Amino acid sequence: MNGKLTVFRAVTPALDIYEEKDKVVIKAALPGMDLKDVKVKLTANMVTISGEQGEEREIEEPGYYLKETRYGSFERTASLPVAVDPKKAKKKMQAGVLTITVPQKKKATKKKETVKRKTTKKAVSKKTQKRVAKKKK
Image 1 (cartoon, rainbow, N blue to C red):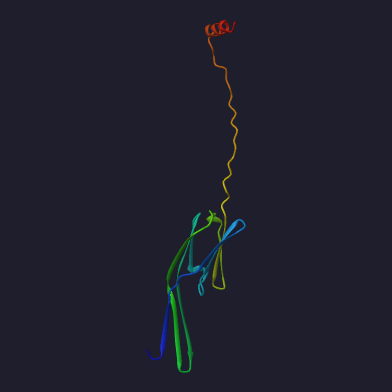
Image 2 (image 1 turned 180 degrees about the vertical axis):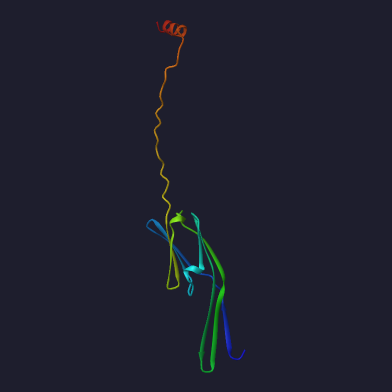
Protein backbone atom coordinates (compact mmCIF):
# COMPACT_ATOMS: atom_id res chain seq x y z
CA MET A 1 0.00 0.00 0.00
CA ASN A 2 3.03 2.29 0.11
CA GLY A 3 1.82 4.11 3.24
CA LYS A 4 -1.40 5.19 1.54
CA LEU A 5 -4.68 4.84 3.32
CA THR A 6 -7.95 5.14 1.43
CA VAL A 7 -11.18 5.52 3.35
CA PHE A 8 -14.60 5.04 1.72
CA ARG A 9 -17.61 6.43 3.54
CA ALA A 10 -21.21 5.49 2.92
CA VAL A 11 -23.43 8.40 2.06
CA THR A 12 -26.66 8.53 4.05
CA PRO A 13 -27.76 12.04 4.96
CA ALA A 14 -29.08 12.68 8.45
CA LEU A 15 -32.51 14.32 8.48
CA ASP A 16 -34.30 16.68 10.85
CA ILE A 17 -38.02 17.25 10.23
CA TYR A 18 -40.09 19.58 12.37
CA GLU A 19 -43.13 21.86 12.36
CA GLU A 20 -42.82 25.59 12.70
CA LYS A 21 -46.13 27.54 12.90
CA ASP A 22 -47.86 26.85 9.58
CA LYS A 23 -44.94 25.16 7.79
CA VAL A 24 -42.78 22.05 7.87
CA VAL A 25 -38.99 22.35 7.83
CA ILE A 26 -36.79 19.53 6.53
CA LYS A 27 -33.02 19.66 7.01
CA ALA A 28 -30.54 17.21 5.50
CA ALA A 29 -26.80 17.10 6.22
CA LEU A 30 -25.09 17.00 2.82
CA PRO A 31 -21.53 18.27 3.32
CA GLY A 32 -19.62 19.05 0.16
CA MET A 33 -22.70 18.97 -2.08
CA ASP A 34 -24.25 21.69 -4.19
CA LEU A 35 -27.97 22.30 -4.51
CA LYS A 36 -27.80 21.47 -8.22
CA ASP A 37 -26.61 17.92 -7.34
CA VAL A 38 -29.59 17.17 -5.08
CA LYS A 39 -33.03 16.06 -6.24
CA VAL A 40 -36.00 16.69 -3.93
CA LYS A 41 -39.36 15.04 -4.50
CA LEU A 42 -42.24 16.21 -2.31
CA THR A 43 -45.76 14.89 -2.07
CA ALA A 44 -48.44 15.97 0.37
CA ASN A 45 -47.08 13.65 3.06
CA MET A 46 -43.64 12.37 1.97
CA VAL A 47 -40.22 13.75 1.09
CA THR A 48 -37.51 12.00 -0.91
CA ILE A 49 -34.02 13.46 -1.16
CA SER A 50 -31.59 11.85 -3.59
CA GLY A 51 -28.37 12.60 -5.38
CA GLU A 52 -24.87 11.50 -6.15
CA GLN A 53 -21.83 12.60 -4.27
CA GLY A 54 -18.23 12.46 -5.32
CA GLU A 55 -15.48 13.99 -3.24
CA GLU A 56 -11.82 13.19 -2.87
CA ARG A 57 -9.51 14.75 -0.37
CA GLU A 58 -5.80 14.26 -0.06
CA ILE A 59 -3.67 15.27 2.91
CA GLU A 60 0.08 15.11 2.54
CA GLU A 61 2.66 15.54 5.27
CA PRO A 62 6.26 14.33 5.36
CA GLY A 63 6.19 10.55 5.80
CA TYR A 64 2.38 10.47 5.91
CA TYR A 65 -0.19 10.19 3.16
CA LEU A 66 -3.96 9.96 3.62
CA LYS A 67 -6.63 9.90 0.97
CA GLU A 68 -10.30 10.01 1.91
CA THR A 69 -12.91 9.34 -0.70
CA ARG A 70 -16.63 9.88 -0.32
CA TYR A 71 -18.79 8.98 -3.24
CA GLY A 72 -21.90 7.15 -4.23
CA SER A 73 -25.55 7.73 -4.78
CA PHE A 74 -28.08 8.08 -2.01
CA GLU A 75 -31.81 8.29 -1.51
CA ARG A 76 -33.62 9.10 1.70
CA THR A 77 -37.41 9.01 2.10
CA ALA A 78 -39.37 10.12 5.16
CA SER A 79 -42.98 10.71 6.15
CA LEU A 80 -44.03 14.23 7.00
CA PRO A 81 -45.97 14.94 10.22
CA VAL A 82 -48.75 16.87 8.43
CA ALA A 83 -49.98 17.37 4.89
CA VAL A 84 -48.01 20.01 2.97
CA ASP A 85 -48.36 21.96 -0.27
CA PRO A 86 -45.41 20.70 -2.37
CA LYS A 87 -45.90 23.32 -5.09
CA LYS A 88 -44.88 26.08 -2.65
CA ALA A 89 -41.70 24.45 -1.33
CA LYS A 90 -38.52 26.49 -1.00
CA LYS A 91 -35.06 24.95 -0.73
CA LYS A 92 -31.61 26.31 -0.01
CA MET A 93 -28.16 24.92 0.70
CA GLN A 94 -25.99 26.60 3.30
CA ALA A 95 -22.83 25.27 4.96
CA GLY A 96 -23.53 21.72 3.80
CA VAL A 97 -27.11 21.67 5.10
CA LEU A 98 -30.06 21.44 2.73
CA THR A 99 -33.11 23.22 4.15
CA ILE A 100 -36.53 22.68 2.63
CA THR A 101 -39.40 24.84 3.88
CA VAL A 102 -42.90 23.92 2.78
CA PRO A 103 -46.23 25.36 3.94
CA GLN A 104 -48.82 23.10 5.51
CA LYS A 105 -51.95 22.50 3.50
CA LYS A 106 -54.92 24.49 4.64
CA LYS A 107 -57.24 22.31 6.65
CA ALA A 108 -60.52 21.73 4.92
CA THR A 109 -63.31 23.50 6.69
CA LYS A 110 -66.83 22.22 6.52
CA LYS A 111 -68.89 24.74 4.72
CA LYS A 112 -72.53 24.93 5.71
CA GLU A 113 -74.68 25.50 2.77
CA THR A 114 -78.34 26.33 2.99
CA VAL A 115 -80.37 25.22 0.06
CA LYS A 116 -83.71 26.91 -0.39
CA ARG A 117 -86.32 24.86 -2.05
CA LYS A 118 -89.04 26.51 -3.98
CA THR A 119 -92.42 25.05 -3.47
CA THR A 120 -94.65 25.04 -6.43
CA LYS A 121 -98.34 24.55 -6.53
CA LYS A 122 -99.20 21.54 -8.51
CA ALA A 123 -101.83 21.84 -11.10
CA VAL A 124 -104.91 20.25 -9.65
CA SER A 125 -107.95 19.51 -11.67
CA LYS A 126 -111.24 21.21 -10.81
CA LYS A 127 -112.73 17.84 -9.96
CA THR A 128 -110.02 17.21 -7.32
CA GLN A 129 -110.44 20.71 -5.93
CA LYS A 130 -114.16 20.12 -5.41
CA ARG A 131 -113.51 16.78 -3.69
CA VAL A 132 -110.97 18.37 -1.28
CA ALA A 133 -113.38 21.20 -0.55
CA LYS A 134 -116.18 18.74 0.32
CA LYS A 135 -113.90 16.84 2.74
CA LYS A 136 -113.00 20.03 4.59
CA LYS A 137 -116.67 20.84 5.28
